[in-house]
Length: 391
Image (tube, rainbow, N blue to C red; front, side):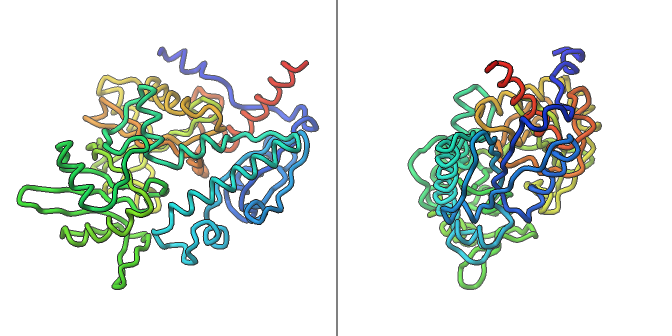
């Protein structure tokens, strides 16, 4: 793709015209920063605020929607009461309970979809696609079947369940893998992720943010730690296994300024609009685990110096997002490997748009706003196109 083609990727800005024609409802936690950031973007676009429907109203069965509304689905996270209702565990930092969380979250999202459809409103985010996005095994298979490069995984799709460490060991041996990521199938934000390494002589170690207390309970910590005995690693994996596990090859990431690096690319309405480099000193580059935003210009230079093209990188992320056409935006985790010459998609995240203060990519029309500005513009544009077709 030429540089001029990249500039033509599609404008994402919109003016204040037609305010009265756009009525939005937002399913979220009213106090959450995600809701605030979306409302701020609406204000900047000259649009009225969205009507907020709280997740606790969905979970209690009291949610109501209005005919003609466009309804956006946002994360139920960062609210202890909502989290406890979904996971059945009162402590929000416990690592266990993600299988129940997944089951209840999907039931709530489908209940909301039924309410939306029954009253003549329209949901912008498909619960069936949400079910795939929040199951790493199914998401991996979806991407692989579409020809999107992903790390090899023996658990891709809904295969036989991983019952514990013995199964992980067997899968690694059968595939000849010495380094793997073991992930909660329904986890997010690196919850329950272990970067496992084995060596000759039977040595095993794992790097993870999971902390195990003296009673065997697992907690998500903000400190990445290393377990250096097989017994410790096995105990954690065995405790997580009932919540469903996904295993994939640990690809060696490229480095940037001496730190391992990957990229989060936000794709809005099919267009890559925002990108952030995430760097870290551990296998997990998540910003809340000690990762830091890296230099995007330096990453682009590394990509182009290696003979790849930035426009092709964005196209790859758009291909991954295209597997989920019924979801209004996704965050794509892009893994640069082999010295920035090759790339794979690590994950596609339903609510991976929380990048406050980050302006969009040059040439996309989103360069003067954040990911929420781009989403508002895409919703306005989509609504206008549908009214034109209806007329």
